[in-house]
Image (tube, rainbow, N blue to C red; front, top):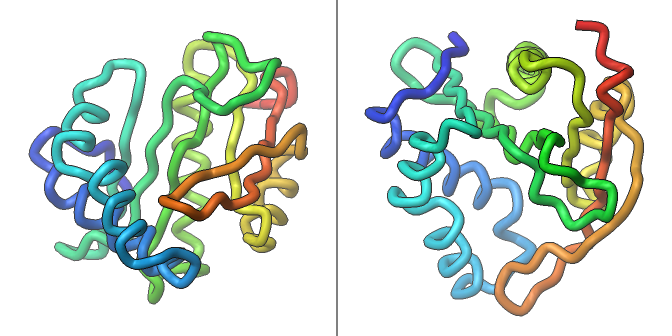
Length: 173
């Protein structure tokens, strides 16, 4: 089941976010750097602030009582000259390892895109790790194109990230 997250989901989302990020990327980082980043990016306070921000939305995906995925969207904060205050961003979309590729991601992605376009057409942006080829293919199939790059810092490591954009004019609804 996919549903909009509520304030009482903050602890679940914080834990799920830290776990899925670690499961996906821990091999890239020094353990101390990763631990510091997780505190910064996935703390309970940060998650509560995201849930309370009217410009952002979080979704929780559950299989029965088990949380298996989530997404976060809101105003675009990617470092690109063409980003305006009207732009939206899919900031995070993650699933636990044993539920990746099960088809639920496409449905969650569609819900997030519909929310991002609810106020009318606008450009949507996504940052994706340069070596996440599966995600890049998925986004390309959905009309996103690479328009830039930036460095995503976790401690002493700086990952090469691609900036993808889909024009608001290309959304059909």
